[in-house]
Amino acid sequence: MKMRRTLLALTAVAATLGTFSTAGVAAEPYKSEYRMSLVVGTAFPWGKGGQIWADLVKERTQGRINIKLYPGVSLIQGDQTREFSALRQGVIDMAVGSTINWSPQVKELNLFSLPFLMPDYAAIDALTKGEVGKQMFATLYKAGVVPLAWGENGYRELTNSKRPVRTPADLKGLKIRVVGSPLFLDTFSALGANPTQMTWADAQPAFASGAVDGQENPMSIFTAAKLHNVGQKNVTMWGYVADPLVFVVNKDIWASWTPADQAVVRQAALDAGKQEIEIARKGLAEAGQPLLKDIAAMGVNIVQLSAAERGEFVKATRPVYEKWKKTIGADLVNTAEKAIATRQK
Ligand code: X2X
Image 1 (cartoon, protein in one colour):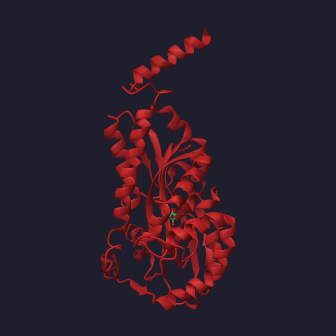
Image 2 (cartoon, helix red, strand yellow):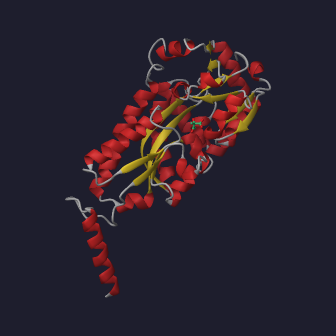
Image 3 (cartoon, protein in one colour):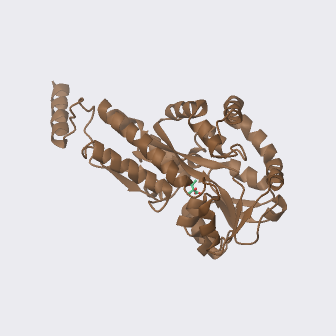
């Protein structure tokens, strides 16, 4: 009897909240607002992707699912490497997150941070759109979230305030801010630099004060965050790592939606992810990389490495690659290597 009354009460609440769609009954009442976590805001391709997702969902559910963006990982006080745990626990309802920030909890995600694994955009696509992408989504699902679509932060280039970097020797002693997985500490240590782990929120004042010399991030982050204004005047285009983004939803939140609404949220993530990748690659994927001309015009020195020069960085970081291949799982890395070797260019 008590149970029946509770059910009736719940049904009444759900009805007043308007959560009955024509396609079915929601398992639980919908929330008036869903909280989407992001590291950066809508000035960045990443934040734009989140906004597109939220807008599409709102429009296609006639406002039943209303998503608010929380950039700066503000739901967890800027501590981006805790984002995945917070998602799993329901502190965060959904996110567009970088594989780097979640790799402390999901070791397989370190795959994308293996130095010099992905030589070009076709290589990234060969992974995310192929068997590796499928396996990674299964792993994320097992780890406690519902993954829906891929996006992209981008190729992470090296910048610093001290000098042009053309060789590993040029990196010697430079204090480089890195984030996330210990893999980054290994990579920069192998190159003779002095890596230090820091959140994105803490990093920017550290560049301004000169507490750190350099960092690595996609050029779309460089321009939107105006890193040239905080001393980052030297860029080395080495394309050593690229971090995909993943559009995900907390499992309980997902289960609370009707199947029809789940389908809408999934399709909106796929559409937003596709658009976001185009925005993230703009000016970089085209011949001549026009974005770099804009950056150079701001007084930034851009080093383009020859194949031989790049090869020196590859060689110096090879032991890190081998070490982490075991941690990530040799089978997964082998699958990735094969997908890249046979990619469509
Ligand atoms: O902190 C970074 O470097 C950033 C913004 O790229 C990530 O969140 C991985």
